[in-house]
Length: 459
Ligand SMILES: Cc1cc2nc3c(=O)[nH]c(=O)nc-3n(C[C@H](O)[C@H](O)[C@H](O)COP(=O)(O)OP(=O)(O)OC[C@H]3O[C@@H](n4cnc5c(N)ncnc54)[C@H](O)[C@@H]3O)c2cc1C
Image 1 (tube, rainbow, N blue to C red):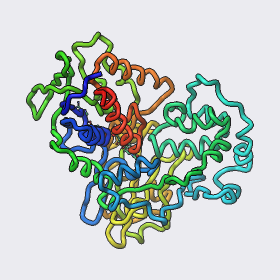
Image 2 (cartoon, helix red, strand yellow):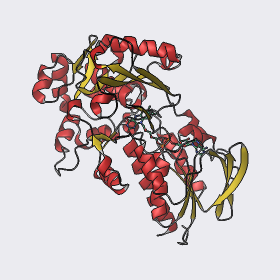
Image 3 (cartoon, rainbow, N blue to C red):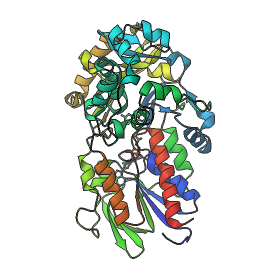
Image 4 (tube, rainbow, N blue to C red):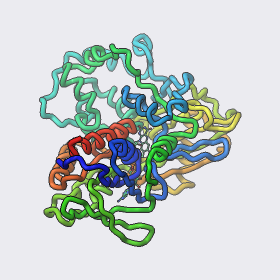
């Protein structure tokens, strides 16, 4: 622990939402914060592009008000007056079954009537509380967990598409313990998902988990955070190595083609796994760095934004979007009904859709060129939603390493990070390979990092 001596010089390596939130909160502790960002803009994978009356989200499209802390963050960063909750018209969620979009049931009665699941699958769900829980130390795949508790049909028609929508992942390759800790805890604490979910039903009347964004998209979050920092984010500044010099840390930097160094008292690394793995720690024992993190799988995802004349889309688009289960044999993971979700995403008389391709399921499709991807998306939108005509706009955004997949055995990466922090006092690590993949997780990670710095400095 350092004795409190303010302001300490704190480097934040990585200017995504994790790093910017950490920077803002650490600045509030009274320290001098410098954000070092390799890219040409801050925000990381978060950013939106206004194209006339169209608004294209490049990465994430919305976030969930999953806790009172997230609502408080939006207030605190000054974005509450701009918050847009998902439109009531976006209430339905569609799954493809038998090649057709079918609305997910939203009430117990609708669940009993839905053609999405067979009578056998519905009965299997009601029997869920009878199945025994897994041994406490099990690190099961999500697929094994769901087959065991809910049956095969739920895996294929509920969990598989849901996981494609959240992780662009495959339940056969995700750990329930690490990727879905709340689901894991329901079984551990209540012996049943159904009983656990019923007992945990929001008795305090807290936020129900509404989905939101902003008029100019999620890029408003990094912009608001940057506006609160005293020192501007240093763009095109890549950190390559961290060397201990007495009580301080000397960072090796590549800045616009030149190399340099800068000295800090504390360093927060808010980077994706491959960037953490590439950081050099020349003073530490061989193997003490984060090279192991290069093994965390990150599937490639392409987000294809298309705009259409309203009359070219016969589907009412009365929902959040559509997800395609792998067993349906489609070539897209799913499509968001972007202009239904939030206003201001498409010109009058038009609609905007955002379609995701690739992921763990079909990495080869993410490698197609723009023309082939556009043709594929148009065909699939035609098949599921009846979309015809020529799109008014198409934009392709590629994410070659989109989202970290928390597979069984993910614990070894978390252990490597904890060991690095123990071996390198004053260096702290956070972000989507450690703290959870969602934006709320990354915002919470920024607060966690600031709390860790406060404990470290003894404040
Ligand atoms: C296509 C896609 C869709 C998504 N959809 C959603 C969604 O709808 N809702 C949701 O909640 N979440 C979603 N997510 C997940 C969420 O957006 C991310 O997990 C989160 O934004 C990651 O933030 P981060 O700051 O930890 O990392 P990043 O955003 O990756 O930021 C890390 C930053 O570090 C910089 N950097 C890298 N190396 C160095 C270096 N050596 N030196 C300095 N800087 C460096 C990078 O340039 C980058 O700016 C989605 C993600 C993707 C990719």
